[in-house]
Image 1 (cartoon, rainbow, N blue to C red):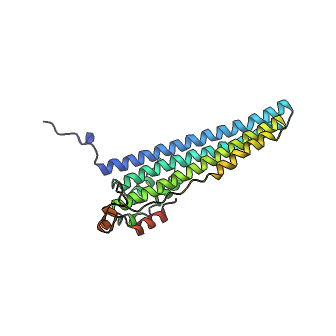
Image 2 (cartoon, rainbow, N blue to C red):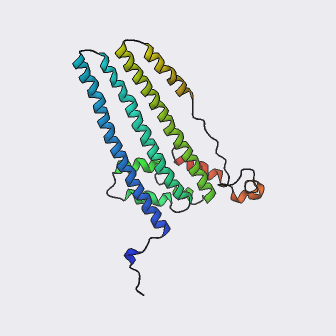
Amino acid sequence: MTQDDPAQAKPGPAKASYRDAIDLTIEQINRRARRFRDQVIAVVIFGAVPAVTAVTLRAFWPLAGWLIIVPVCGLFFCLDARGLGQWRAWVLAAWARGDIELGALDPALRSAPALPRATVDSMLALLGSGKAGPIEARAAAPTRHAVADVVARADRRQWLGLASKAGAAGLVAVAAVTAAATASATPLLLGIAPVVLLLGARIQRVPIRLCRPGADPGSDANTDGGRAAQVDASVVGQMLEILPT
């Protein structure tokens, strides 16, 4: 029987999780770079087409097409916020399972020479920028799961709010272009009406119960007999102070 080659040995769970977190961060940075490039291209196109059309037709109404740049940028911010939310949700889920520690992940990402420093700093700010170390040492698994749940809900509210605003801006832009092309205010009025309804539908905040993950809030695990399994509200509060929500 031959001895296994150390180079072929599988890494332990903790090392694999840190490696996965670094790889996921690199992938997310590349995706953000591609989205930014696509946004620049889209802005150039939607900026040039109305101008060329206006010169060709010798009319001013095609310039209303510049308004479409607003929802295009809004869509970029929405997709960027969604991608960052998914990245942070994955990291915090691994942290809640105890696979990684935020205090150790911070210097690991900062020491990667291939990563752009400014981008990494902005992403690590979503994880507390290395301030979680002293706090996470006192966070048990239920507390970590509660923190991850609160942050995931907050991130979802953020990108859904950006999506609703981008959609509203898109409706107004299309309505304005149509109104300018037809020299009628009717399309603009028809476009504003659903925007008012869309922005009026606020995303409700869902209260977070600080209880053991997966347990019934009314069960013994979350009553006086199960206090040991409950989360530490003070630690949750301290973690949420350093994790932007």
